[in-house]
Image (cartoon, rainbow, N blue to C red; front, side, top):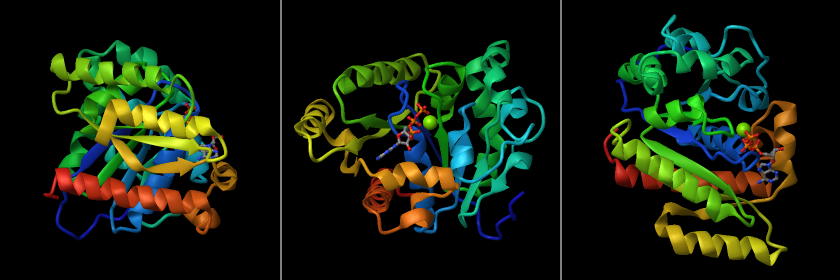
Amino acid sequence: MTEVLNTAPVNTRVVAVANQKGGVGKTTTTVNLAACLTQHDQQVLLIDLDPQANATSGLGLPLQEGASLYRALLGHGSTIDLLQPTMVPGLDIIPSELDLAGSEVDVARQSNYLHCLNRALEPLIMAGRYHLVLLDCPPALGILTMNALTAAHGILIPMQCEYYALEGLSVMTRIVKQLRDSGANPRLEIEGILMTMFDKRTRLSGEVVDEVRKHFGDAVYETTIPRNVRLSEAPSYGQTIIEYDKHSRGAKAYQAFADEFLARAQLAHPAG
Ligand SMILES: Nc1ncnc2c1ncn2[C@@H]1O[C@H](COP(=O)(O)OP(=O)(O)OP(=O)(O)O)[C@@H](O)[C@H]1O
Ligand SMILES: [Mg+2]
């Protein structure tokens, strides 16, 4: 477990990184945004909510039985006991492992099943040791993603620059509206839309970004993440892009994105 900070408690913002579409850059964004934010003196917790455990292995952690949030989601044991440090100072993780796959069924049996993650995170948020909790969601709108969206203040949606991007987005925005309107999570905001895997050699990438901006305006971050092979190599070394190649285009893009993410979050929520 990480050291208890001696500093005053801070306000914690919970952000779900979600898109039901697979392979759009959710995990790459979660891991590298988290790493870049620590360079701004932010204490960050990454919770790997995907049974694929890509964020866990991408940060160089082994899969450990019982290390995931699975039991805590069912109300057993303390979430705080699950915190683990990573190699990145200022970044902690609650890793994933295969157990988490079972939670789709087991959590669904709980009363008030959409709020299991909310309940599990409560003591952490009360303790006020993290500025940001980032939830890396699986590529489905199942129980885990819905729990993440119920517990979050904001949803960050990574979108690949490709055809059909807009259709996927409208599914996500409809879910956000449903969660708000049903009262399951009235505070849920769209934190922002991040365009990923931008390929400047094709016209398509530019056209997709223009189209998404036309519909979603300022919700789309100014920063776009380029397609960059270094970003896809880093996880196989268990490293973030900052450790693996901080001079790469991918690293510079995620640093610029972290600046923008922070500026926007502070503008909207100046306290904390
Ligand atoms: N900007 C990028 N440039 C090049 N490769 C990238 C980039 N972003 C992500 N990738 C690669 O694309 C693949 C999918 O990315 P990633 O795992 O982040 O997506 P995901 O949305 O989390 O996927 P899943 O839905 O399976 O969880 C990975 O192999 C990753 O290394
Ligand atoms: Mg992923």
